[in-house]
Structures are given as C-alpha cells and as structure tokens.
Image (cartoon, rainbow, N blue to C red; front, side):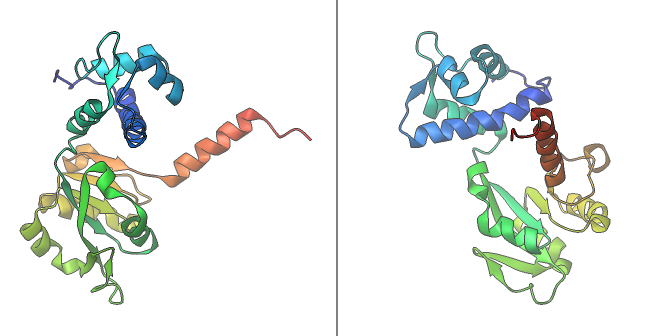
Length: 215
C-alpha cells in the first residue's frame, strides 16, 4: 500500500460510502463493478472514484473494473478494521443504550466489551450481552481488557476529564457523542466528534435552498 500520510480529509470522508456500497453489492452477489457503474450508483464521477482509490494503491484493472470482495478487504485494511477493535462505552443513558442495542458495531470491525455508568440502577445490567460496570472500575477493567476505542455518551461537563482518563488507560481512539468537542491535539489520540445537530442543520439548510414546496 502506498504512503497515505497526505491523503485529504475529503477523500477519507468518502471511503466509508464506498465501503457501504461495496458491502451491499457483495450481499447482492455482484462480483465485479466498473468505476463508471459504481459512480452512477453513488452520485459521483468515475474519475473521482479512481482518484480516491489511487491514493491507496491500484485496485482496479482496465477493462475489468474492481473485484468487489477484494476491494472490500482492501478498504478494511485501510480503515484498520480487518482485525477487531475492542471498545468500551461510557454513559449507559438513553443514547448509550440505543447504540448498544441497535448499532451494528461489527460492520465497522468493532466489538464492545463493556459499558460504564454511575447510576446504580444501570450498573449490573446487560444490553445485547454487554455488561454495565461501575465507573470506578474503569482502570481495573481497561487494564485487564485493553480496549482500543472509547465511545463517549456523557454530559459535556464530564467529557474532557473522562477522555484524559481513558487515554491514560491506553485507549487509542475516541468516538465522542457529547455536546463538547474534543481535540486530538489535546489528547494525543484520534478523535471523531459526532454532533447530530450539525447533520440536522445541514438538512434544514438544503431544504431552505431547495425552496418552499409548490402549492
């Protein structure tokens, strides 16, 4: 694989879309697909897809296109999800429980191993087989289980201290759903801040730009 140090954020942001589409094609028993056909299904251009994938190596063959199963494997290697990443979730409130119950972590090569909370009525319960542990057990369990990723579903006033605590426990990446954004420069590990309001506001903007419905 070629050096990916200078791959743009725009390219990286499109890769999960390629992965989702390829997984769907694999489920439909599609064995190969051209960049033109892939672009048509995704609303992109064939040249854009070729340029994006060329940042990581040559995966297609002229006159043949892309081998769907092989490209899925290559993308899993690029994402680093070819081997399962272990995750802990902090905050087993409504959002945290919804993620544990409904989100397919395995699609991303991630396996939750424990959740943590301070609420006594939650500690000791399990959600889809994931136990909720007391927050004071965080260091003990992380020292034993060595999680790679932390999922934060905690109030904004707690997130900075908990993130720093998790990094000291050896967590190598943080998926942050709190209202306060975390900075990779401050923590020294990759961070992905998820703000549902941003997505909803973008939708509202595009609706406004599209204009009011015709009477």
